[in-house]
Image (cartoon, rainbow over all chains, first blue to last red; front, side, top):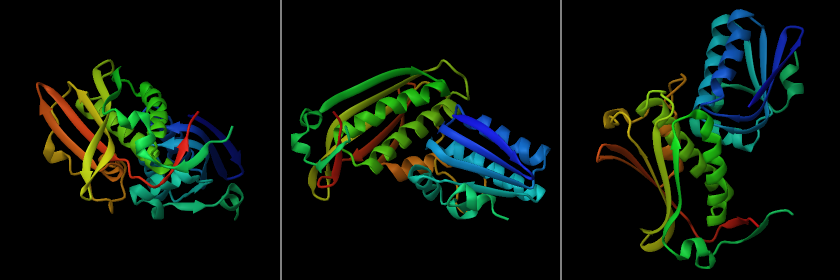
Length: 110
Length: 169
């Protein structure tokens, strides 16, 4: 998995690629929580378009990001969900708790 | 070359004609090896003729089961032994014999507490506890047992005939 972050005014966009599993999800969790809890970014967008695989620990990291965003009053937005990611979120029955946008343009809209 | 789709006919699949061991892996508990196992199991399920969503389901179940072994049975300790074997079997389903993939995962970690194998209510919005749910959603049979000092997890996925298959070359 690779994570890169772009900072656009008051929005942080994470571009995630590769596989999110037990070996990589701690890095995702750490990056999300730093942006939300430490830097208090008003909006964090996670672009998952290039993610090939996500396991339960990856879903758990996203849930932690969501909970942190609620704690600090930020928006936490997922975008670019491909079939594989949608399938796993659907299985987890957590798909509806996230704010999901079809693409990054929508996720960045005011 | 693009993958070719054709009707599934288990009788024409040489991997399913001879019942028995297809693949056996011995690995050490290390999260860095999960992607290696996924990389082996994915083409195996494709060659057996599972449709793409069911290939992903089997891979997900094996990955989550190995994750549970590493996290819970071995408490995150790396370098501990895990065995994974994959067999072609036939099971009775809907009153008829069906080809199926049987996966047996064995570890020598802390004995699995069956009372903790129920998972958690999914309506709770909190991280963790999803792995077992994913395994049960993905497979037709999920059985835990403890034999000769080892935890054993048996997973079975039935190969249902008549669905499109992706043929690898």
